[in-house]
Image (cartoon, rainbow, N blue to C red; front, side):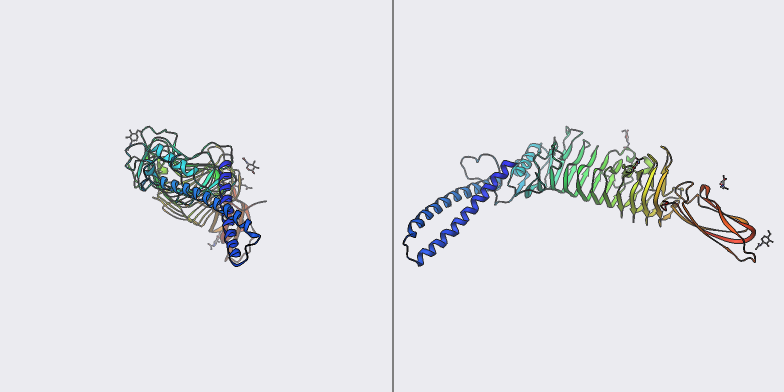
Length: 503
Ligand SMILES: *[C@@H]1O[C@H](CO)[C@@H](O)[C@H](O)[C@H]1NC(C)=O
Ligand SMILES: *[C@@H]1O[C@H](CO)[C@@H](O)[C@H](O)[C@H]1NC(C)=O
Ligand SMILES: *[C@@H]1O[C@H](CO)[C@@H](O)[C@H](O)[C@H]1NC(C)=O
Ligand SMILES: *[C@@H]1O[C@H](CO)[C@@H](O)[C@H](O)[C@H]1NC(C)=O
């Protein structure tokens, strides 16, 4: 890396000094044209000699670049003669499109293209670079690995070299795992082992179909910064469609992922396994992505990820599947907005800072808050729509099999609408009419947390002649009891809240 950088720097410096000399020489000529040669003649001659020598060197250098240009694109037939050594390298001035077929990859998918594609990747990494992105990550200047619309069979992961590099695009074709592909591998693998904090930056994987052939996963992104996965169709994975770990800002967008190719309602749906997207890092975004089959659609175990426009219809919740699983107990920091949970729901372990809004839950899909250590803080589940089949499924549920939620603070489940499901909320409004000394409004069917009311407001409205003394007497088991000292006909209006911060 360092050597390469030093070399290109010295080449650049060489070129700039040539340009300087060239300009100087020109000026000197004009000066001599218009003036007496005199004492300047000696200097003129030596400068010109120097200039010519430099020019010669530059031409040699330029020629070497041109040869490399020719060598890289096999569609331009190379002139007969000794093959250039080493094999294809890109010129500084030439295009940096490394075409799969130029390296002998087989676009019909019949023969193994692993080595050819790895050579193309290696050449891209060893090609010209311009300075660096993050420290230690050289800038490949937008080099492209072009799959040229081919369908390539590979028997090993296309693992990017360990040398830190970025500003590279891999695009435009299909990769399919062979029948002997390692079942723990990924078709495209950005996970070289390195002691650096980050290895890759601004790698873009675009317009690709990745077929894992039921052997391993699609894409692995480890210790990478600002990776884009755009318009990809990832199928037949058994582990993860996309795996992200460490690094940050992997942006997954406009993509389709499913273990089996189905349009939903598949007869084999109970058999679906694997995870479509596994985010084990921070600050990633999944936007406008469809997940059509997998045991878990998106598994999140890193903070500050955002999911938007996600449509999950992978294995139905009724068959044990999960649309989105948030496995970050006590520090969730996840936003899920504008998504479509289609027969498959969301599970959040001990949610702390979780926002779910503007989403549509169909087919009894619901949200399950799972207690690990009983913490639920800063949760907004608001402005969503739920639609079900009148089986009494609650829109938000608690799994307290590990123990009850006991640290509950700023949890807001409100303003959701339901059709054919049971509404649950942390905020309730109710009223009751009666003639007597006691009024009870039972919020237990509505409120999410059993036996928790942090805030009550009520008003007692009586048309009778008496003005009774009345008071709030009991909120146990989410039942609000108001009592008066004398019997009166009255209506009592009550508002309760489970989520207000008490301290
Ligand atoms: C589900 O898998 C089992 C065993 O793996 C298999 O016997 C069965 O045929 C599969 N069912 C469907 C509907 O594909
Ligand atoms: C949750 O996180 C808070 C703040 O980081 C910490 O004080 C608390 O002990 C954690 N609770 C559990 C159950 O891990
Ligand atoms: C309320 O109950 C009392 C007796 O307990 C009765 O005298 C009174 O008529 C009742 N008022 C109404 C409005 O029903
Ligand atoms: C409140 O109501 C519950 C039953 O719902 C009862 O067990 C409890 O004793 C009541 N508390 C008071 C202070 O009356």
